[in-house]
Length: 464
Image 1 (cartoon, rainbow, N blue to C red):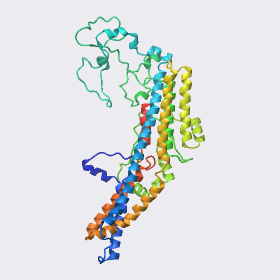
Image 2: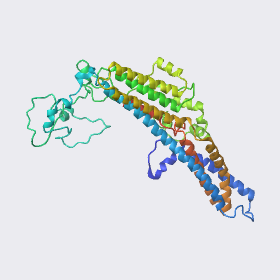
Image 3: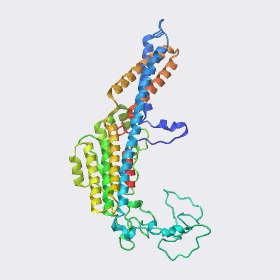
């Protein structure tokens, strides 16, 4: 996917050549100009009887071809946007399933001693003049979600009264409400599972989030619960295999999976930026793109092999063997889906979800099913091409118009330079719009205008 910014009047977009439908249209536009001058040399002086008595005769043809091309372009955009929606539905539903299972797991008996107090156990607090406003009594402050700031946690969040402090003697019937906030637990409460001063991502003597790995860090000397690790791995594997089969469904072709490294940079969405390029003009890439030689199965396989999809926890030899044994992209995805579903059901029966009822757990199965529905919608677009009869007809008339437009311009204009310019612009417009349709029809294969599968997988990893 080509990322761009909106510069003044969009002039900056003209500098991008690879992936441009304008340049592809201009190639046929120049050919059409050559045809125009050939026609002029053949006819020489204007014949006494014109080929067409009125330009409306040409207008009927141009209007018909324009409708044919615009119809294809419209459906190409619909396929592109539907694929985007299907991919995001798939990922969001599988992420919902993982998040719900993680929340249900924390309700089992293993975490009773680290759970925060429940409002249900202290109904008398509702009779007091308390508030849950986090910033009451402080000066106005704007905090950023993305930029790490030095915030005095003890000064800002430990001044309130704790649920456990039952000896509070404070007048709360008049004046401002009293903030009711307990001590901030930057370790998420996980330190209660381990020895003193041990946790997972948090360490007291370490600057906040200094290793860049976020909640995946093991700076505290401990790792998350094994249930959560396995849940994250299976969800990540399912999403990676699904995305991999969407961008490459060639049986026996290399579709590598890599180990996810917490804190690693975001993958580049633009393929031209992968190898340290700057997205500018490169002869080899440009020639392969405009000749269509970068769309062969071999080139697509090499491209996919250079961009492996990462999986949390990596992929074991046994998992790879099973995935290789499954024949076809749908079977591989269905196999990973079955692994995750079986894990959830097995752990629920064993008690890993505490007292959460079976009807609630069934919602997780529904989320998994909804995600598979999104995958199949995306696979429909990837596997079923734009109908051949319409594609063939549009190509035929595009080639035909490369000859007809010069003939029309020679007929209705009196100066060669004006006819050449109009021939070039008209042909470039029609052919460029046709190239837009061809680029958008399959958003999983048409590099560099494909969807950023690796970036989508990275989004999913960070959320897991």
